[in-house]
Image (tube, rainbow, N blue to C red; front, side, top):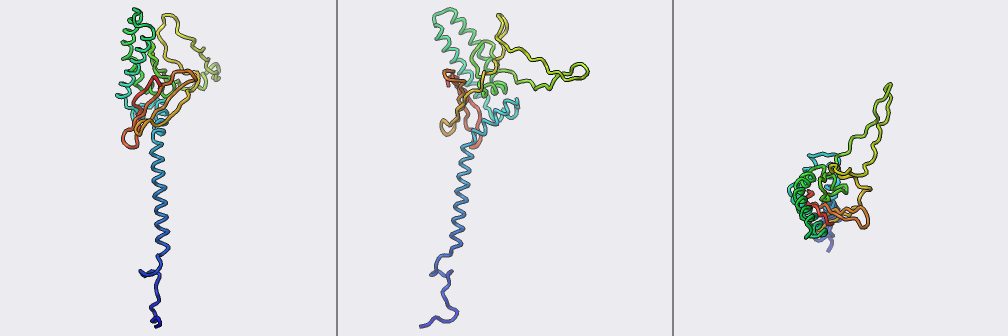
Length: 235
């Protein structure tokens, strides 16, 4: 029996072949979703590196408002106190627990912990920690002052520009002189970074083979944010 006129099978009918265009749309949608998920995971992984970079730039510029966004100062203060106390305790044990001079040194060190922690729980202290200059527990120790703005030259006779005289490098503290701020390291420290768990990110600093390592510890604050929350002076 012939097919009645106007009754030819249609490709869109239930018995026909599935259309090609909806399949392509589904494939394109799945590809876009996969790309977005990969990009989101990459951004999530990079967030502590971004926080570290922004914090270091802000600390070097002494931008206190931005530093406050990336530092948990109460936690950092507690960590500094604990770490410096441990540093002085190990120094005392190495010098001999029974020595009367060691006992006096321990008393002096205990009195110095508070001012030292107060000086490092600041934008200046954060800049020092992120530039390879952690607290060492020395008497009168303070983080280095921010570098002075470069001068183009001082005006000499007849309005000429004469370069300002350079200061001789400091060779050390004179006997009896008050302790000077900790100087800049001889070279930039070697740094290694990485996750230590899902919610902790560690930056380890070392100036060279055999030099004592220390770490700055960032902890997750919410989903995207990270804050400098602790230090580990033992690396």
